[in-house]
Image 1 (cartoon, rainbow, N blue to C red):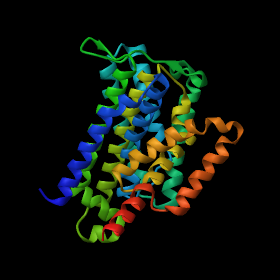
Image 2: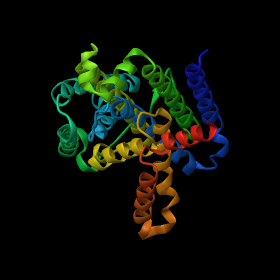
Image 3: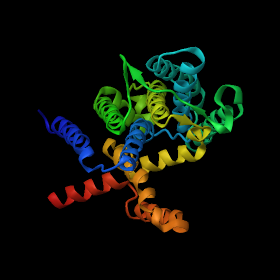
Image 4: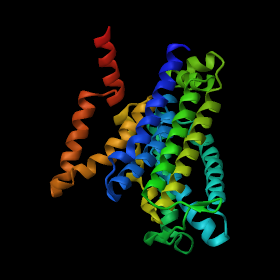
Length: 314
């Protein structure tokens, strides 16, 4: 087993161990709630990092896909009698098709033009969810039924934590295999230079669309799980602010780093809870911490610390 493979599976083993030991440190329902939300954010950020960190394609509307998955799991069982798992799968397929249709025109753009196009896409989703009162409940939101499978209804903190932990582990495993496959190498080539990648025979547009669709489907599934867990959703799940939060998690943890996606998601989920004692100054302190970290660690937390560790070893 070579070093890269050992490092990959060693990291997966550490993640499995950390997730398994997590309940030992969660003392009440609030702790479980934060851990579950952090896990769901990490799942979305892993998919988003494949798009931003590895393929170099910005998305400022990714919360829209998250919200579409959530509303699919709310609307389809309630209005059309879908089984919750069937609604989740149907929502993921629909989001994948929407992402494919959207990606073909907007991924031909670059730089701030691409950022503005994805921002517009997210705003459109948010407006539709907000205005279609008869279907989505409008600004007031709508309730979501229980998540059940094979006669078992997911309920209780430990059950939800276990489900999210398993999904997070599977997402990390899939992402690592993708990154270390020929597809992953093609994505890195596209990020480095689209012209050079095309000259080497890489179908640049195909891989950009592929990773966009994959990241959207991952966000949709996480949104569906969140909808069933929370029991109630609003259009805020697809807001511009939520999209920026997700991008910030990716950048803070470290782009082109699966571990960084998890670390960034956990930090930006837990940190606001830890700063609650500052009351009116919470957002000021939160912003100052983010600014300081990005000034001192412009490559992100995990890549910077990994570079320091390698430097000391050498």
